[in-house]
Length: 355
Image (cartoon, rainbow, N blue to C red; front, side, top):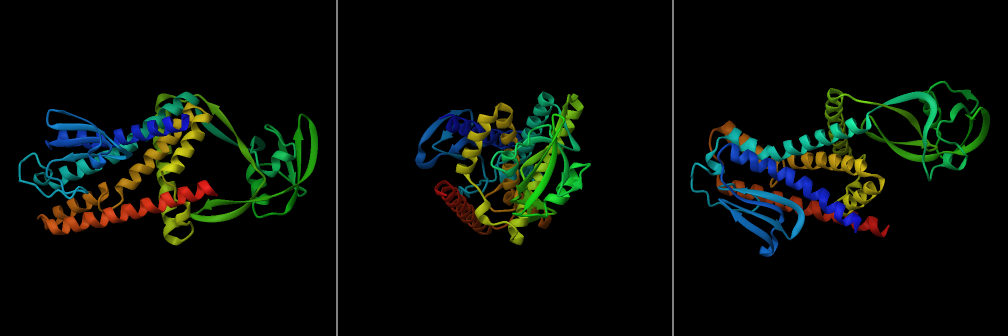
């Protein structure tokens, strides 16, 4: 139940923020907003209430939302534009682009704000490169040797260790083979053989198999000022955006598989795990998914915000409107692509449940 509630809350916040961006942008340039929905109003089922010109509602299908402005040719395939000044088609290209991109901008801003608040609360972590253990991970070989937090690695395979990087440079090339580790614990030196475990790391945009024993660096936290927290908010948002870009590159080059792509069930599982780890972990996940949502929507795919931006840019460059038939075809292709993507991620999610 906790997982379900937290998943609905997470999605609700992200969708509301995204659609609020579209809503505010539309109002700022004089577009009439006909509908503002959280969830999709399938079969006319759901809650709805009209205030002024806008119908507000909560749809039956929760995985999405939409803001419908007058005169826009979107996935609803409504081509009933009349040329009224408050319609989407009556606005210039930059106003249309502002409307289409506002949801993405809001998702990025949400991530920055969350990361900023987390940094203010927790502080900034400064990584210690000394060979002192910060954490021993369960289900990894080191956990069974008696290695503990704050233990210091002295040598690996007889080679003296002075820094963490020296240690990893020795361990990572050794996969599924025993290594001899010597470490210091409470003033006493211990020595044991450990069988490395294979793991996949992303190095220079490629998936590389490396040997690991399951220990991590020590991170020292210090208080952060407001300015430092804001800077960290931007830095972490950019970091996760680049992680997504690298992931897409790996999908294109074959370094990663479509089987690795997750959907709503995977997000729900991650949400449940993050809630168990604490409120800050939950909001950290929310920020990361917000960046993913922004990235997905900005892709130049029909039916997504990026597709609308491409059409508006094209019309701005050629200085005339594209034929309605072309726009309809563009949207139909986009809907088919999104349905195919949904089928793939749902198949992957269900496969993970049974595996």
